[in-house]
Image 1 (cartoon, rainbow, N blue to C red):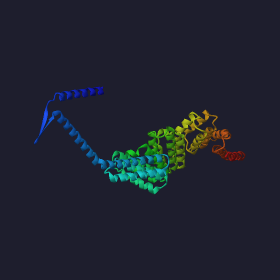
Image 2: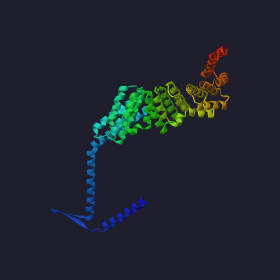
Image 3: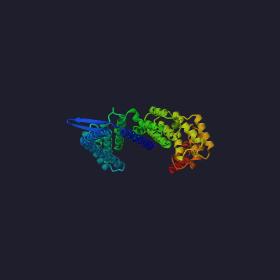
Image 4: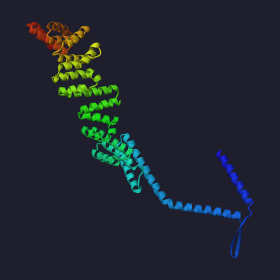
Length: 425
């Protein structure tokens, strides 16, 4: 359609020119004494148009001729710029491929080309960002090559090219460099330096998942367990790990805190800081109660900590593994001193409801010993002792039977019980 309109326009112009020229009878006379030159008006118009075109072409040619040096210089700058970008891309490719020495060489080549360009140009496009990226690649390669001095030099150059008050892209580059520097310190097993570099991050950047992951590893390496636990909980809220992995990490850190606690007040505060779901975990409640007993804490409070786990375990005997059940029984045994009738009723009820579980019978027997119910204790321990597997429960059961036999002056039964205790180890 457009081509048809152009043709119609051209035909219209041709018709108009033909009508004008064909009927134009005008002449132009030039007087050049003693000569007189007569020219048709059409010829004069053609000469004027031809003169204009010739002058325009001459001026254009002169302009192109004068701009040749500038165009040649610009062409050389473009070639350098292309080589600079090519070197930087090569450096990134070598870094991803694990060729760290080649990556550093390519990054240094890109920096050299950028420096030569900056002397020729007043402002290289994205020059600061390019320098920061090249220095970062060189620093990463130096770290992989274990060249710490060169790594620190390039890191300082990155931070210089990306100041605090720079553009948004420069601030992002600086934050990324600080995170990588923290990771390098962590690789060097310098947890304190890693935490120091993470602390220098802005508040928003320090709460990113990558920064929190590095902080978690550094805090665990530095034995800052409380800081690591707080970080792990934040990561769990951000869903940085799977639910199972998050629970495992948090549980491990809580257990580490429990084992490192040497004060009952601090242990109680740690217990209050736990979530209700964490308090109900056998893996946490049992060690916490045993640690409280070791530190000389209130035994009734230890039993209160174990109550949710006890209710959970006695509701269905198959929910806990054998090792977990044995640990729970040992933990309750440690805090049987001063046991009240309510707890005794719980233990005896569980023992009656599960007659095939010798560990519950053992616990009931030890509870009766604490309450000085010697007949019940003798009956429970005598029934469960042969059924208990080798381990501390069996040894403790036979030892208690031996003591009660000695108390009755039954030396023969005491000797047999001590023998069984020795064989039950």
